[in-house]
Length: 294
Image (tube, one colour):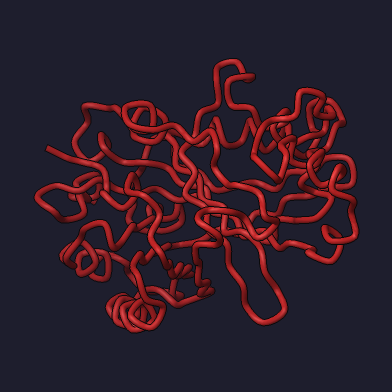
């Protein structure tokens, strides 16, 4: 029986390394994916496959699509498709560096590394803004219901869809704000993480409240801070049983519904956005039966 990739539901690790790949022109991805499927799998690795790779296989994953650009009043979210995405999880950055090199070499005949980002835990689970991240994340059965596809078809049940965005923070802009304005952007007090009773309409907690959508837009977030040179921000990762909930939240955040832009945009911007499909596991290996007959 197929099961979700365990790293998807596991608590965040101390360190992460994210590898995003584009397709090598003219290459057939079948052999590379077969090697990846045979690679030992556990909590230490999560694999996502892009729509372009599925198309190259001549297959179809119901619900898989590319991200599309979104725009609101003065805001824009780009779409940056990816052919393959690997999330390496562990305790030490150097170990993840070498594991990433091994995995990149394993698929190098079909995929080229586009981007490598290292993630880390900040102050026990806070964003670099200082605020707690993922406060209302679903847990237990609710997390499974939000993130895992429940479908009897072989190779589909137990899978998940993931949205991956790299947000770049303007920490100088954040530092220039008064504390009340900062709290208003989030809708929570920095001091104790308590939600503001008088939060402004543009507060993130109001724009992105998952239960306020119809139907409710529950997603499982597994985001981590990142920093490279002078740039820093949040690698936002959201797993879902479809992309619908994530897209509904993002449309409201950019103000596409009512012209009210989420307060987060006052100090941070998304610089990439990709949609991928995370196959389930069967007997500890990637279950790629959807493509067996292609």
